[in-house]
Image 1 (cartoon, rainbow, N blue to C red):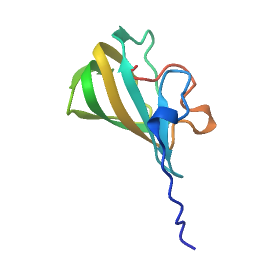
Image 2: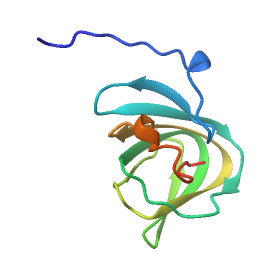
Image 3: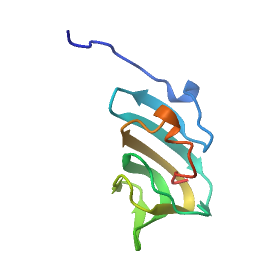
Image 4: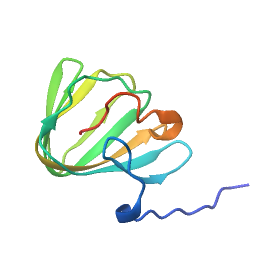
Length: 119
C-alpha cells in the first residue's frame, strides 16, 4: 500500500536542536532543517557526518571548509557535503539557510554527535 501521509511543519513552532537548527519536514529517507540568522562565528572543530547534506543560502555569507578546500556561500548559492567528508563552517555575516539531509540527520542522534552546522 502506498503511504499517503501529508506532513506540514510551521517553522515558527518546529522542534529546535541543540545546535540551534529548527527541524522541518522529515520523511523516511530525507529531512530538512533551518538555520536562521546565525551570528558570525567559526566551528572550532571539523567534523564528519553519517549523512549527505545539500543546502541553500537564503541570506548572509559563510565559508565552507571541506577536505582542504574553501567554498564561499552567499545568498542564492547551494552546496553539497558528501557523507563522511571532513568539514566545518565559518559564518562571516548573519546567515540563514535550509538544508536537506539523507538519511535524516535527527534520527539516531546523528545531528547531535559533535558539531555539524553552518553554524
